[in-house]
Amino acid sequence: MNFRLTMVSALALGAVAVTSGAAQAETKTLYIGMNGGNFERAYTEHVLPPFEKANNVKVVIVPGTSADILAKATAAKDNPQMHVMLLDDGVMVRAIGGGLCQPISDDAVLKEIQPAARMKDDMAIGVDMGMTGLAYNKKLFDEKGWAAPTSWMDMADPKFANAVVFQSASASSFGLHAFLMFNRIQGGDENNVEPGFEKFSDTIGKNVIEFIPSSAKISEMVQTGEAAIFPLTPTAVNNLKDKGIPVEYAQPKEGSVVLAVTQCVIANNSEPELSQKLAHYLLSADAQSLALDHGNIIPSNINAKAGNEDANAKLTAFRGYMETAKVLDWDAVNKNRQAWNSRWNRTIER
Image 1 (cartoon, helix red, strand yellow):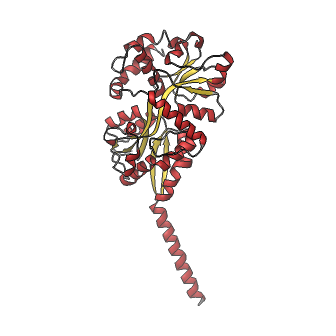
Image 2 (cartoon, helix red, strand yellow):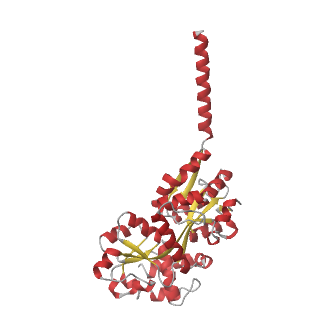
Image 3 (spheres, helix red, strand yellow):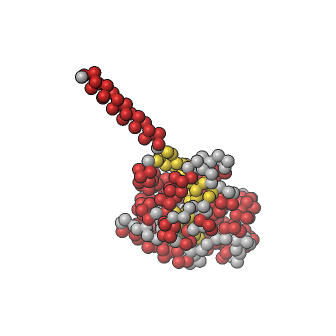
């Protein structure tokens, strides 16, 4: 009898081991490219876990700037290593043009997405709606008795000599947005940037203390008092304020520039159905509510709700900013971007 019991126990344990092994074998891994920092933290800790649990899948974030992620996807176009990627809208236009994306499949959630977030044929859809405007060093402004900025042209005010921090227009969406708004104010548009290039150096350019490739250094420069005013998004401002950095956002009277973080399902990836399922989840009200509450990430889903008063205040402010936000002609921008980059590096940041 003892022998029989031992055999039954062994068989039972073996069955458990086989079942456990099968369950582990069925766990799939998806790779999603996106910005690091706040975005990566909010998604890793709060947004992705419910999807992973519900679908027995592990989602691994590949962090990097939009340019980094695009380069990785382009290099692996014939054998995609990622399944979904999140890129700034202008960069996403290039990704779509390069054949890296497939349409996001039809789903009930698409009816909940604000129209401005949906790119043509749903090749990509925004998961984070934002805009580039102005930010300023609140502590420094208070000490100097300066009023909050109201115009992009405030960066050309002589009182800000050696106190303007400007992101490189050849490397940063923020810098490009600010330059193109300056260009519009000077009479140009995305098909004619001559006014911007002719006048930038003698106006805003003469006040710039440093051109930076990304916004990572702004926190340090605000705390040392070097940075007084700079292009930035409300989301980035809120993230800095959460860390105790004395900054505030100001909506320029000429309007901010819409900056959406969009997602696309990578064409010919190894898990097409599961990738689409992940894309639909990231567009859901539940996912975007988590992103708002834990990452200051502004939802594109009209049914997403703020979970606390602070998040609700940020969402209300954002909707006000959107009333005057401008959309760039990305076809014209991407057609000429390489030439602009070379000219910017040669004549502005020389």
